[in-house]
Picture 1 (tube, one colour):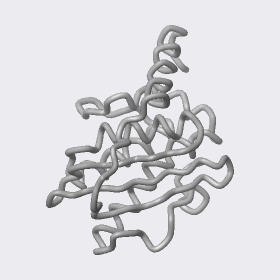
Picture 2 (cartoon, rainbow, N blue to C red; picture 1 turned 60 degrees about the vertical axis):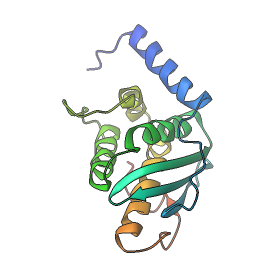
Picture 3 (cartoon, helix red, strand yellow; picture 1 turned 90 degrees about the vertical axis):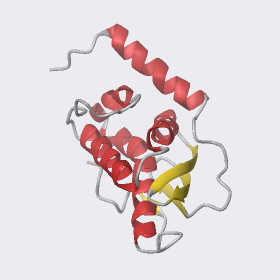
Length: 165
């Protein structure tokens, strides 16, 4: 049973709109170590993620998305959360977001920023892919980097990852 109040729903809506209207992570990253592009072919969302690493740390991240408010806001939240994190920490946050979109609660004791504002998205399966797109794009970029590549072999698509319901 959903125990959220109308006031909480309004707050979450405000947080999503703030991230959509003023997305974080828009500063270009010169000479990125890894770059990936993602798309949600069903709704037209697109995202580009570029990361500059310092050893194993995501020193700087650029996220540029075009599409719906959920996709852009999710990418903005991701940029805020993963900057300064190790690749392993970023991968853990990606798993947390995937779990969140599949109905699991956010873990206690883990810095999750504004991710709680995305909880309502899980009620709309078509929109889950919108929220996951930036995270899946970053995940594929980090996987490519671990394999010594600057780009994944193919852009990320919400229709091939099998992560959304």
